[in-house]
Image (cartoon, rainbow, N blue to C red):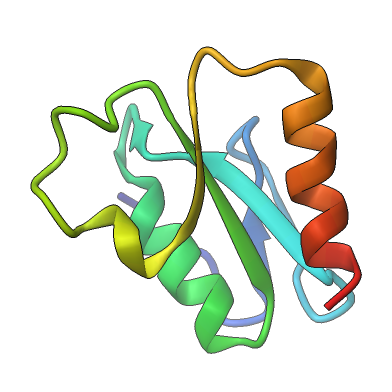
Length: 90
């Protein structure tokens, strides 16, 4: 997975945007070029809340997801909105 510059966060479209003004980010665990958990770790290291979304929650090694706020697919729109709002209110 290509690393984004220190002041950038990668979004779901694989484009970069300044992370310094972001309060929260979300992304998939399985990305075509790496792990969304790496993106979540980088965001958390910069003080940005991370919400992880995955359809593979039952196949990921036990305990891995417990370090993250995560949602399992399929998810409903209101679940995603609630997860994002939860992070924006921190």
